[in-house]
Length: 98
Image (cartoon, rainbow, N blue to C red):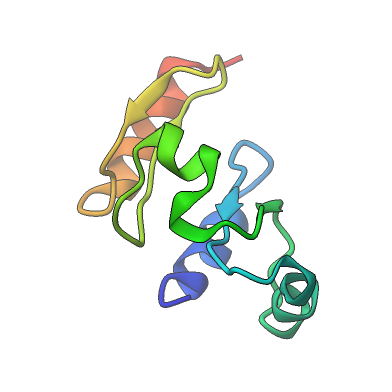
C-alpha cells in the first residue's frame, strides 16, 4: 500500500505501461472494497492463500513490496526494480518499441 501513489503516477504515463498487483489478503471477498477505497483500478490477483498461494510461491515472492519489469514481449527485464525503476522502465520500452 505504501507504493500506491508511485504506481498511480507510473500508470498515468500512458498505455505502454500496465500495473498488475498481487494481494496477499487471506479473505479475498474483502479485496474489491479495499481496491475501490484506495482507487486501485489495475488488475489485482488474490487467491486468499496469502504467502502460501501457488502464484506467490511459484514466483518466489518472499518480501513486499516487489517491483518487476516485463517488456512488451513478456521478457522479464528486472526482478528488483525499486532502486532504479524509471530508468529500467524507459530501457524496457525502448528495447521493445513497436
